[in-house]
Image (cartoon, rainbow, N blue to C red; front, side, top):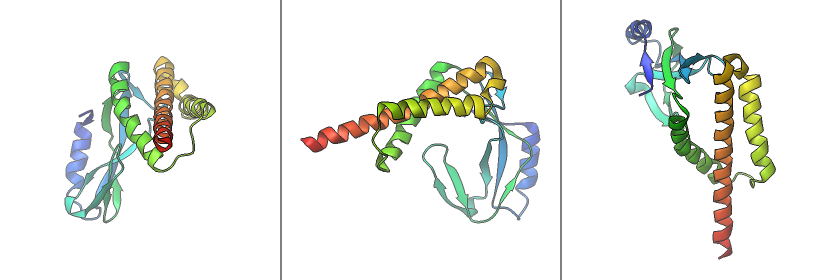
Length: 175
């Protein structure tokens, strides 16, 4: 519900679906966070596969931001899909609460090494550094700082929940 098709992308899609060459198409996604178009923080280019031929679909993979796996080649569209998310902190954190739980569950089921205070601090700091400096969040002004901090907090929430699961597992096994 937070993605929109521009008139230019609509025309490109109408042309693309008539082709037999590709089983699916990926397109760049133009992200709008905090009411502003973002290029920093890893927002651009952000390619997503959203157009595919149903009969060529093999399966879906992933729990968060599922992606289709298709039988055949994937073409690339030029016009971007518009993605309006992170409108405010409250709605972003509500979404993060469920997504971080799913990610934590996957890490726990993969037998992630024990979570310690220093691992929590490390993954949080690394994510902020990655988003703000390596992925140029600083070019987005205050919004880039906020988005980098939110992504760092999301990483903290994932690992904190893995810690909770590990702790619960230890307590259960001692009984």
